[in-house]
Amino acid sequence: MMKKKLQINFGELGILYALLIFWLILIVFSPNFRNISAFQNIVREASFTGICGVGMTFVIISGDLDLSVASQVALCSCVLTLLLPQMGVFPSVLLILLLGAALGTFNGILIARMKIPAFIATLAMMFGYRALAQIVNATPVVVENRLFKLMSTSYLAGVPVPFIVMVICGVIGTVILRKTALGRHTLAIGNSHEAARIAGISIPRTQILIYLMVGLFTAAASIMITSYLGSSNYGMKDGFEFTVISAVVLGGTALVGGKGSIFTTAVAAIFLATIKSGMDAFQIQSYMQRIIEGVILIFAFSINGIRAYVNDFLVKSRSRRELDERRRGSAAGA
Image (cartoon, rainbow, N blue to C red; front, side, top):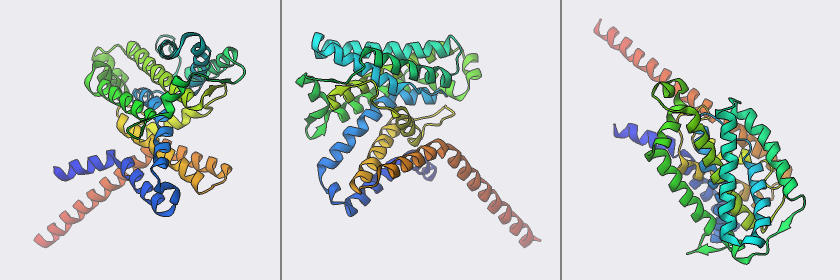
C-alpha cells in the first residue's frame, strides 16, 4: 500500500522533481544561476503564467479550453492604462477584475447557452478581444503611476510580489477545486457530462462559473503583467494562451478532463520560465528557442498519451510475468 502511494505521489509530482534537477544542472553549468536574483526573475516571470493557469486548470479539468486568454490580457491591460490616470490604482484594479469576470462570463454563455464548442467560441473571441484592445488603444501607453509599477517590481522578504500573488491565487483555486461544490462539479463534468447530468449537476451553470473564474484570474495576471512592463499595447502577450495551456498540461491536468492540480500547474509554469531563462543564459538563437518551445508544446499535448502508453506497457509486462510464473509453477508441479 505504501509503495503504491509513493508511486502515485511520484507521478503527480514528477514535474517538481524535473524542475529541481534542471535547477541543479543550471547551477552547475552556468554561473548566472549561482545568484539568487536569477531565480527571483524566474519565479516572477512564471507568476504571470501561473496566475492565469489557475483559471485555465479549471477549464481543462472540465474538458474544455480557452484560447482567448492572451487577448483578454491585452484588452484588460489597455483598459487599465486608460483608467489609472483618472481613477487611481485600487478602483482601476477592481474594475479590471470585474471586466475580466465579464469577459469570462461572456465566453461561458457562448459555450453553455449558445452551445458553441469551446474551441470555436474562444478562438472567435481571441480575435474579438484583440480587436477591442486595438479600438481601446491603438498605440502603446506608458504607465506613470509609481505605486502601480511597484506591484510587480517590488519584493517582500526577498520574494517577488507577483510570486506571492500567484501563491495566494493558487491557494484560493485549490480550496475551490477541492473543498467546494463548484470544484466537485468541475471534476464531475470533466469525467462524464452524462453522469454529471444524471447526478443533478447544472452543466451550463457550472461552465459559466468556470469561465468566469478564467476571466477573473486572467485579469489578475493582466494587472501584474502591465505593472511589470510599465505599459500596455494591443499586441502584447501574443501566444500567451499556449504557454498557459502547456503549463497546465505539463502539470498533469488531463486534456480530456476529469483530473488536475493547481499546485503542479504552478510548478510547471516555473519549469517553463526556467527553460526560457536557461536558453537566454546559454545564448541560444531566437529561432532555436521557438523550435524548442514548439517541441515542449507538442510534448505537453501528447504527455497524457505517453503516460497511457507507458501504463499499458507496464500492465501488459506485469501480466506476462505473472502468466509465465504460473506456467512455470504448473510445469514444476507436473
